[in-house]
Length: 83
Ligand SMILES: [Zn+2]
Image (cartoon, rainbow, N blue to C red; front, side, top):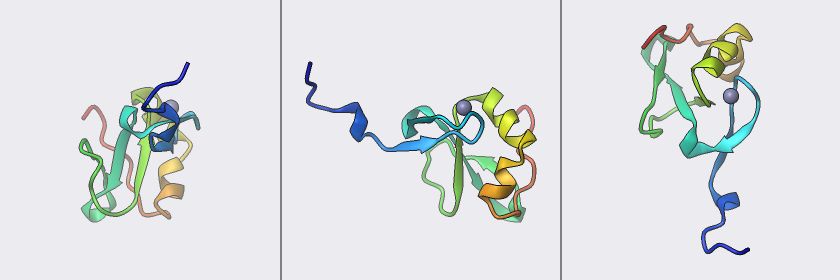
């Protein structure tokens, strides 16, 4: 079955929590804001480095694994809780 818009062409990003590749649109983007604090980037357009997770569970998993620190070269502060 062929589709005019192949889903495989959608930009994909790796979730920092579970390590699975998913369409960028279905992920939550976080970016490094002023002061090195992670901020949610709802529009996925903030400049600078960003990281992706597919849900709150993976956000916590990424925090526990210090995936943010690695992704942002040690500058990241823990993501906001309950935001
Ligand atoms: Zn995930």
